[in-house]
Image (cartoon, rainbow, N blue to C red; front, side):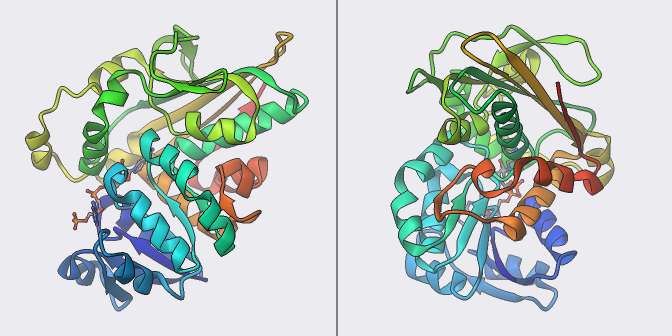
Length: 338
Ligand SMILES: NC(=O)c1ccc[n+]([C@@H]2O[C@H](COP(=O)([O-])OP(=O)(O)OC[C@H]3O[C@@H](n4cnc5c(N)ncnc54)[C@H](OP(=O)(O)O)[C@@H]3O)[C@@H](O)[C@H]2O)c1
């Protein structure tokens, strides 16, 4: 299998590269900076192409089975990379967490991806994939019918903090983040939705106060589950810290990202609750170490396992939900439902 990584010399891109190197993959590194590409290539093929140069991107991706785009912030340039991957006849996945980008991909790329016979799945991350897959598992356990609500929450504890690139992504969409993000309310996308949760119990912890937050799976879940309400939450103090207190020009001074030891001390958890119109409820959770390492594992495994009907698809439409979550066990990831 031949895989092109766009933004492969960034922090997340290098983790994806290391993860893919463990698989039997032929890797092409693509990016806008030839010197930075050469610095991480170690004999692998490199191709230089700016996100603004469609023809160069198509040429760089041609021949690959799949493109993994790690070049965030995604809201300004991610759709152009997805369009080039489609034009080159490649499946496309990315490591975005930005709701506006994810929504744009769903709304603008589907017909072209379908015509080209390729699968496009944004938000192949530590949060976006477990959240979307758990929601599907719960919906099926509740009978597969329309749901009243799907509520999803993320928590991250322990060492490390965010990468510089994640900080830039957050600041680039700070208005939607400050609003609590997009929620799905009776068929409409709203930033002013009434929070349907005030607290949430994460694995191994009692209930903690939560605030609405711009989570990626809020955008993907309504693609495959009929639900009246879909909302995302994080711990309230985390949401307060994410609300843009950092000035744009201070971000360059941030460390590139947590080192390997700090990543191992990190614990993430995703909790999803689904409720039927008659009040039956199911809850699922997934947890593990190392958010960025988990994203690399999910993107790499995802690129290999992607299968289904061409078009822009949610994770649960192109990955077998329970089997894919099980396949993450070697990365220290566990999951359960009740
Ligand atoms: N759960 C989640 O939501 C989640 C988890 C993991 C990662 N992510 C996302 O992954 C992204 C990458 O994070 P990171 O820490 O790897 O950032 P990073 O170290 O800054 O790397 C970003 C890479 O993208 C490239 N890039 C950025 N804008 C570009 C553009 N317009 N055209 C071409 N190349 C561009 C950069 O190239 P130059 O050096 O040439 O600028 C660099 O190679 C972020 O958006 C982050 O939020 C999200």
